[in-house]
Length: 297
Ligand code: NAI
Image (cartoon, rainbow, N blue to C red; front, side, top):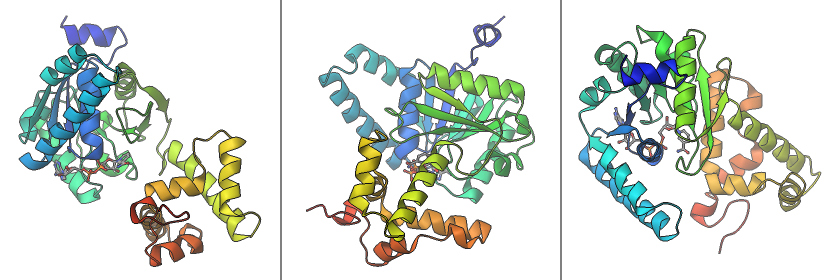
């Protein structure tokens, strides 16, 4: 029995080599997490430039981690040896036991990627997307072996955040659920397993519920936003309140996600909250513009 087969029989993922597609905010760090955890890892993008940028950013991040004593120089150098950047997606994917796609959030782009991967990967290779908004059934439709398709949803920054959500579609095989979950745990992450797909998954739905209630309290004039934030911080022990978090994420991001939800459902409940629309139209987009709910002088 091969090493890979043995690991799988022992309840492990059976993954030795991983490919991460898209070297942006998420993909670069997911690849770094995999390389640090001991996997041979390919980081793929469509051009050399994003790959070079990812390498630069990871280098300085690792250097900082070593300086601060969060990682050893040996661990970081060993991870570099396992991390290969390439634009040859198909060769990387064909050599991998799992592919985690973290390319742009565009359904057509992702469908094209998975349809092409389906023909180059072995049928045992797990196909996962990191998408926050696209449920796996929408991608499994274009994949012949749809049983190997799921979402593995990491949080930003992936090197730091512990949570990974495993989101199956109705056709995801038991074997894929088990192996993809084992892979997330082998990355050192805390696995949150969904039994079925739902837009927003679990963590972002919890966050949305808190934000909706916070905005409703504010709109009704029940309390001012700094007081609502103070309640979340001091009574619920959240690291920041919902209004502070909106400023950090960007008012534009909050606004555009709601617009996209409304376009999908047609439900007026899903329209951006009037207070959010007002800030968005005034260009008060949060920390990045120096002003959102709060002012950042
Ligand atoms: P990003 O825009 O920072 O990076 C996307 C990368 O994909 C770019 O480097 C781009 O060149 C590359 N790319 C585009 N088309 C490609 C293709 N056909 N093949 C290979 N690479 C391609 O995006 P980000 O923020 O990293 O998001 C990526 C995915 O992760 C999205 O699906 C998003 O929903 C998800 N996500 C994002 C989070 C965030 O906070 N940014 C959190 C959790 C999930």
